Length: 200
Image 1 (tube, rainbow, N blue to C red):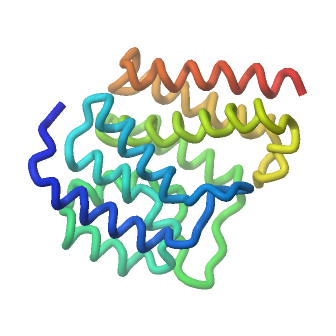
Image 2: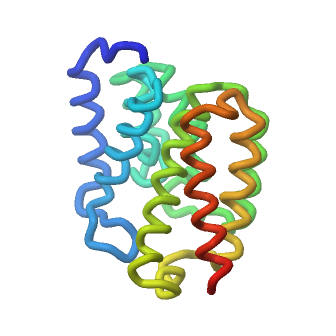
């Protein structure tokens, strides 16, 4: 792994993410959303990510959730640099301006998968896989506790969720980190999801 050269950058990114996600909980839980971005960044660091990639893990949802994407793009670039912004941009499936609705769920996800499949940037794939692996793990662990009640939290039924993560898995497997530890961890959680959707 590239060394984490400047710990103050990570601290600043954590504070930035904490401000953006203050008071927000993970869907259907009382778990602070900040736990998710910290977990994603940890997976990035554990699987060979650079400092910029670890920071992008902390900030990967800020453009979608921060309320003013244009302002935040400038802030991320100024505070953390072009590379971090590049990865965060690639991680965002919709960044509507204030008052504008996001496109429908399926259209957004199809566009995101197509974008990822065309992307050969290992950093983007590493951060994206960390994000989706964390999400899958949370879904699978929650399903083990509450069963089908889990699916009520989401904007799409379990079959569509399975389609989305399967399509992502195909893009990851064909991408620059196919066969890596990161990709294998994603595939393990995807296998658990297939079983959970199949036993409904």
